[in-house]
Amino acid sequence: MAKGIPIAPSSFAEDGGLLDLSLAEVVSLFQDREKRRSKEAKDDENQQEVLVGSRGVPMGLVMSLDGNTRRLGITRGLLTRCASHQIVAWLDSLERIRTVVGLFSTVHDAAEEYGYPELYDGMSPKYSFANTSDKSMSFRTIGWVKNKLNALATPLGIPAGALFIVGLCYSLTRTGVESKGTVNKYLALEVTHFAQCLEERSVDVCAFNDKVRRRAANDGLDNTITG
Image (cartoon, rainbow, N blue to C red):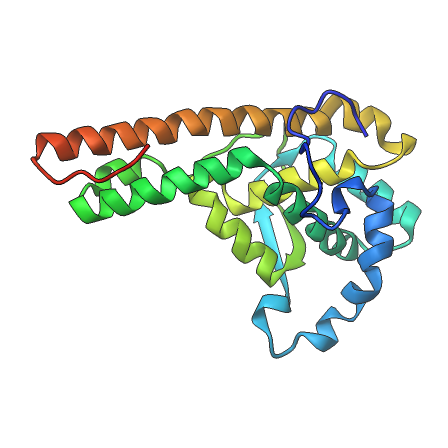
């Protein structure tokens, strides 16, 4: 794994050990389940295979994905579905995400109650990759994973597709020496960039909170927002 990524979790107690595994180990753990997914999930939308995409992807992502699928002897779709489990575990491990989502939800409810949609509209998702390869790409994941990404997108200010792609970059930093150059030059940089964007979003959400509080005070409303 590339060194210097600043948002590695301090504890893996709640992730079932997934964050300790290499990408190849994650594939080995989940590939049998994922191969059966299309047959076993017909009546459960949350378990069905779905697509998540983006108009751009980080430089080196496609090359690294294709190299790992070839060496592991599987399809890209199977690889990204297996990686989806580790991606969710990684996102769930990040305290900054929990903090931002919690405050955003509180302020969102207040802005809705008091009638400030223009303040909410200013918090729409937007994200630019650190080094973008100009390719529109879609990746295969699982319904419940995409639903989770959609729920995080607005609070974090990052579209669901971009969140998934950053997660793929994280999983690819868990590969062997074969991907070392691409990981160190591009994919680990994207994970670091994501960490910086999370910190900036935290500032933006605090500002959103302040704006709603001040507007409510000026309007003489009973402001019960905390934070």
